[in-house]
Amino acid sequence: MDVDIISSNSDRRPCGAGCGPVAEGGRYELRSLRSSRTGRSSSPRRRVRRRLDVDWDQVDCTKDQYTGPIVLSHLAGTGENANPGHEALLADNYEEEVEDLVAQFEVIRALPCLNLLVDKWRVPVLPMMMRRQAGRKTLVLDLDETLVHSWINEERRHDLMFRVSILHPDDTAIFVRKRPHLVHFLKHVCEWFEVVVFTASQRIYADRLLSMLDPEKKYFKHRLFRDSCVEVDGVYVKDLSLLGRDLSNVVIVDNLVQAFGFQLDNGVPIASFYEDDQDSELLKLLSFLHKLIWVPDVRPFMVDKFRLRQIVYGMSPVL
Ligand SMILES: [Mg+2]
Image 1: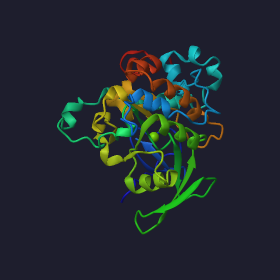
Image 2 (image 1 turned 60 degrees about the vertical axis):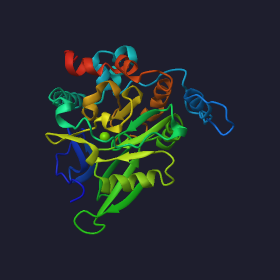
Image 3 (image 1 turned 120 degrees about the horizontal axis):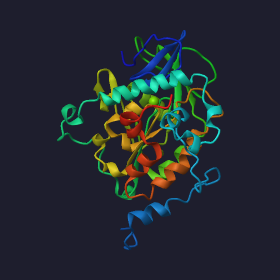
Image 4 (image 1 turned 180 degrees about the vertical axis):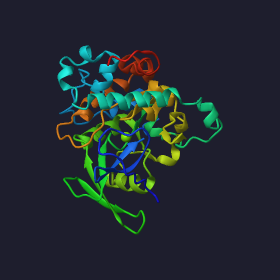
C-alpha cells in the first residue's frame, strides 16, 4: 500500500505523527501526522535584491502581521502582546489543540540525539545550490495542512481532484483544497528563496499533487517525501541537516512543531489549514519571511519570535 489509510476518530486535530489519508467520521482526510555575462561581479545580496521586482499589491512588508498559531502564542504567554484581543480568537476546540501541542512537545523532548539516528557522513539529499540562486536562503515548506488540505473518496467543495492507486489501479480519489492565497504566496517566496517542499506524506500522493500545484516547476526547486524523514517511534521528523545547506540559512514552515523537532530554532509554526475560506496565514507569513531574506542567521530571529525551545523544554504552559 502506497498511502496510509487510517480509520480514526472524528476530531479534526492534527495527529501526532506521519501522514496519509485519514478517516474522519466516515470521511477520509489526507493530513500530515505526523559573475554575470557582463563580467561585473555581482554579490549574492545584489542578485537577490534585483529579483525582488514582483507584485507587491497584497504584501505589506513594513509591518510583521504574522503571529503563528494563536494557541501557541497563548501557551508562550506572548499572545496578548502579539495579537491584542486574541482571547476572542481562540477556537472552540482550544483545549484539544493544547492537548495536541503538549503531545507534540513530549515527542520532541523524547527525541534521541540526532547523531544516534543518522550517519553523519551521509550524502545530502539536495544537490549544490544552483549558481543563480547563490546567496538565497532555503525555505522548506510542509504540504498537508500547511499549503493544502486533502481528503479521499468524498466529493465536496474542492480545488483539485486526482486518482491514485492504492489497492487497485486508480482506485482512490483524492480531493484537495488549496489554502487561500497559496499561489500569491508561492509566486513571492520562489523569488526570495530556494523553495523546497518537504512532506511526511507518501510520494505516490504528494508528487502527483505537487505536479498539479506547480505544473511548470516554477515554485518548488526540490521535493522531499516521507522516505527522507527520520522515523522515531512512528513519528516522521524532518531533519534539516539532511539538506546539505547551512542551517543559518534554512527556514521550515510546518503546521506540526514536532516535524522540525531536531531543529526547533529553524521552525516557523503555522496554524493547520482545513477548510477556512477566510484563512490569511500565508499572506501574513509573507511579510515575516521577507524580513528573513537579509538576516545573517535566521535562528536568533526565530528564537526571539516564537520562543519554541523555551515553550517545549522550559516553560510552564499558561493553560
Ligand atoms: Mg502538515
